[in-house]
Image (cartoon, rainbow over the protein chains, first blue to last red):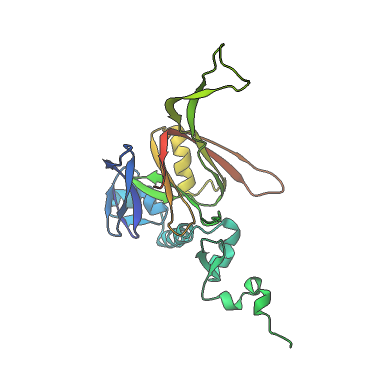
Length: 124
Length: 138
């Protein structure tokens, strides 16, 4: 069963071990074909599209469902906490900085919840 | 030196040889790794201290996560497939630091439970028993 990745994904490289005999991480670029009995799971999760009929059948998803899954994975990959899904969906945030502050999206200026006191107009 | 925020940390499960992010995770508990020791005290030792020595072995422990459980979600079904079809599975935890540091490890076993409570969303708890030790950032 084959699926084609639509985004770069990490894989554990079990053929190239590090000094402690642990698998290393390699990047699998978009376009990589995954041939695996569970490849349909990648399609269902929104990171791949079916590359053969068997995978298409096993994934059992409509085009609309696949589009929704692909969008949801974009949110996942950004590490968005469930509490912030609405902000991400609205384009207010796109992720987080290492200090925990949100990376602002195109709709951030319209969102009052992210306005700080410094943003308030100065009356003086 | 920095204090790293937890928001943005991701847990990934190896599915079809590919590390995919587990959805709707609320919190992650890192594996409680431990270097094994034995009590090395002797009858003729002086003082009140109890001495210990390393055995030279280390235990990977278990990692766990709490999530909002969605039974229809493919990724959550993949978690439960490790109950019905146990197998060694790769996992990673990617931190929200500037370097996007990663711990990777193999899981030998998985337990899954959850809570359906009146005043909360449906939650699941996943615990992963490590096979060996994680690979730490170096």
